Image 1 (cartoon, rainbow, N blue to C red):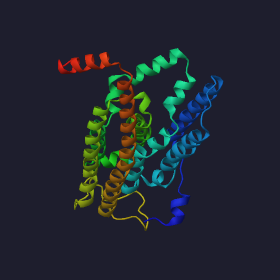
Image 2 (cartoon, one colour; image 1 turned 90 degrees about the vertical axis):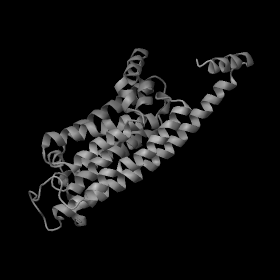
Image 3 (cartoon, rainbow, N blue to C red; image 1 turned 45 degrees about the vertical axis):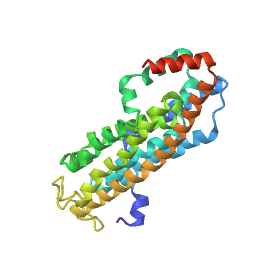
Image 4 (tube, rainbow, N blue to C red; image 1 turned 135 degrees about the vertical axis):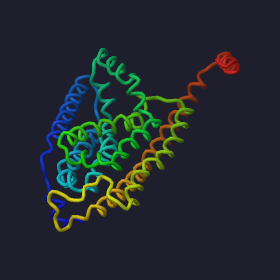
Amino acid sequence: MPPFDVLVSAWQIDWAAVVMISAFGVLYGLGLKSAAANGHRWPLWRTVAFYVLGLGSLAVLTCGFLGVYGSELRWAFTVKVSLLLFVVPLLIGLGRPISLARAALPPSGIERLNTVLAHPAVRFVSNSLAAPLLGLALFSTFLTPAFHTLRADPLAQALLTILIPLLGLLMALPIIEEADFQRSSAYITLEFVFVFIELLVDAVPGILLRLNGQVLDHVMTTQAALGWFPDPLRDQQLAGDALWFICEIVDLPLIILMFIRFSRSDKREARGFDDLTDEQLEELNAQHLRGR
């Protein structure tokens, strides 16, 4: 493992991350200003969570130690990508960017936002049915020679820095901002099944990296092997350990959030039934029996 002074002193400028952080920060700031002009008081803790926890963690992961040595160390790259996909979006989501956009935009802007959120591609990615497939597809590349290309190629790293957090936001925001992605209780119950499947599926690439006895990307040297660098096989095993652990532990808060989401959805549907008259409820039951 790296010495402590290396962990805290290794920094770089990741221009893709700088552009993304700047764009997110400016847009959120403009949203705060517009929401205030519309008479909405945005909670201070959500602003702090967005900037300090969300964008701050993105900056540390891309510009700190993991970003500096991610091209040479498999385990550093794996930890960076995993946290960019699973943790950073959850922290950014604490700032409720979609709710802020609704408070800041005029009616025409809200309509355009609704159109984007209703797009089939967004609806597909933003449900727990797709998350296991997307995570498996991404981490399965770590079992191939493409693992080295993703780490070493500057263009690939820039694209990952931008696309991975965006993908994570599409998967996390439906759980955090359930008002914009309302599902029925039955649908959420089905999502629970897929979340538990995700607990198993996401860990498969990590387990394979950990237990394999050969270097899967076929790269046996590093550009600047320091004294504390592990050998290639041990590096791959550490990457497998990290991926396995992160994929398992991150699903726990997601399951808790889904329980909360299910409870709110169930209460919302119960209130809807309570508002029906006896005649409306009988007609609804009759339509259900007729299969309508």
